Image (cartoon, rainbow, N blue to C red; front, side):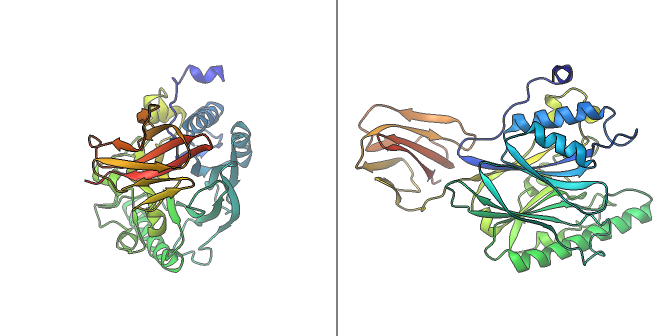
Length: 370
């Protein structure tokens, strides 16, 4: 891997303590060896992708444009902490998922929408994966739909056809979530090849209006659109998105949707790695009541709080830590008494309280009220 260091500096960890993260990344003709198809050095691209995913420590990766099954198998071998599944539709640019094997268990994987070829004119059908959390989490089961919609390429008339294809895809996806999203935790993610305010084609209305107006969930990546964040190296628009159902939305750490600008860490990123940047979001792993919160042998109240919390415990508390949404310990104490903790200087937000007792550790979500 020393050869890679010539092109990259240290890539930081972005996965956080006591949350889980979901990322999506178009890998641009990953494994395609012919000139003109993606980065010029395929071996280097594969090493950089493996290095970035490993360093990120994200829990789940949804991938697009995996163009060589052997290259994908090699990637999985370089990432032993993940299980990888590649879709089986016929187009060369396939979608795939990587998930941490110690956290998630695969329940099912399949292509959907295969009878609606008019909605997916590229035959890149949505790849549906259902995972169950294998650790103590109140989230339990999540359904992923990995997408790679038709690109805005060709003549003006061809681009209009592509626009209408993406519009039909959105209408099909709205029907899908209407049938599945009443209670299911669902995320639709990948390379949508268009934006949420105005289309990349002639500033037409967004082709995703059917989903934008759905009451079953929301595009959390609208924050990136509003910030005019480019998710590719060549164009200013946000075209890599995440849509989250209401059942999963309650676990989402508000405003935690980010474009990971890997060009800050990989020299000549667009030429040697990908023409897309990863996009990722963060979710709470544990949830508790928003009123009085009880854990095993102690209680923490009030929750939400404004200036202080009270901790009542049967067990002797050894210490506590308060952790923000970035995984940083911002307050801690090993000095008793622990019964009343003053927190009036904190900004309104969600926090994790970690309490260590003689019987072990417990974690609790705390909400600072405005």
